[in-house]
Image (cartoon, rainbow, N blue to C red; front, side, top):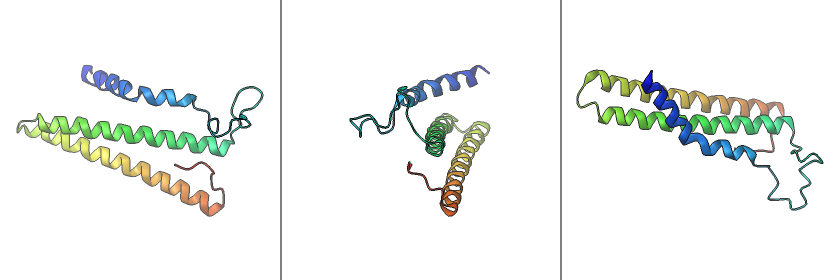
Length: 126
């Protein structure tokens, strides 16, 4: 349990800069007149674009977690020193990281393909 807590804390430290990017207002830098920002100071972004931005953010988060999983698995594999149990644990972690990344990318491809087939293409790209 202590090890899992340390992994979670390390992941939070690594992913902390991503949380800061949530304050970015799309279109603010490109538009000096701030026409994309309403009278309340909030962005006037459509729901479709907001969902796309959230989906992209989750994809970046998942990619960062997959890289973290690869790094942890690599460290476990290197420090196994011939221990079969640790080696198998590292191989399993690498397998699960790859499966998670592939499933996320397939989900993104399926959502984008269906939205383009239906004609709901988004203006915000990955």
